[in-house]
Length: 410
Image (cartoon, rainbow, N blue to C red; front, side):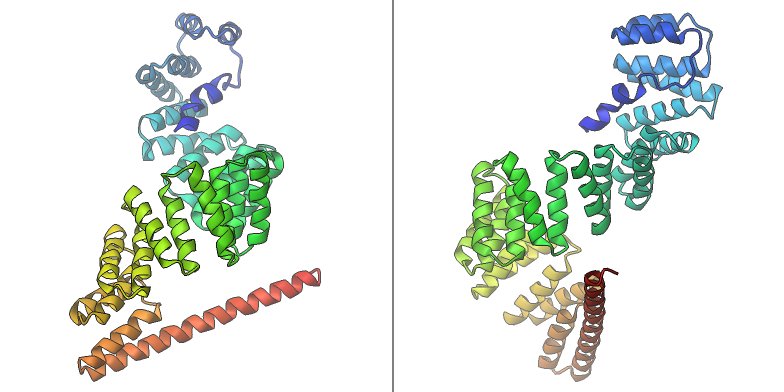
């Protein structure tokens, strides 16, 4: 990662808080870019944790990472609580191989100096890379509290919140990042994307239009514009946006997939098939493209083709409950009841709270003469459906209450 590789030169110059007798000379040489000269001066000093740590830093600057690591380790042996050495060693080991050992050192540094923005921010980034998003958000919040005008930190907080599924926190962080740096196209694009996911397509379009006003060829903004129009049911506008994006990046498999989705929604099944096939040609691992192509074949009555695509979707993503459910439906329609039952059982295992597979299972069992099995499957479908409707009512009631409250200025 480019930003990680930049950490050593960006974070380590002048990281030490105290100023021993050798510090002025070393700093003067570093200011001239003379890392080798600074290293030579340090070699003449009495050994201490601080000297070992600074020596390690200079070796890292000179791309002598293994030697640098040895000096950082020696510094910690001499002074286990010396946070700069823990931080520097953690960064160096992370560059070698991200993992728990490096993470523990970064944690020690952050805990040792909780008011150090760089230590908290770097620890947060490491947690994010290990997909420990909730912990990362805690550290990013601490970092932005220490340095609230750092737009990059707010952007990283937004990324982590988005990955964790917390759209509200993500949109708030991205909005702050955009406020601090209005020309951060990535932050503005991501803010718009989160708004679309939250059902606020109009607000999202405002963000994408601001990006495109500055950079008309921003492929991500064009694609996201298509996503927003798709949510609004403006399929022709969505298609136009995706086609513009593909004119700039014709080998984007996700963009071909999105275009296929828009064409399908517009009932242009042949056009949808062409776009979805192109997406699969470019990236056969996009399970959603196989699934959507399968649905398109199914709608056209092409059951054998639909079966093949659903199997490809399930193979590409073994946790894809919808693909197994649809595969079961297609197999049933072809009279392949035993295979259908197997697919439906897997769909139910993956998502027991979806009523569709239970219902289709009941139909198959009834056709086979299994009255009791059919009754149980139908009963489960009814239970799941009732639960889902109750949950949707609670969500709707809460939404209405919040909207009315907002209008009253609550």
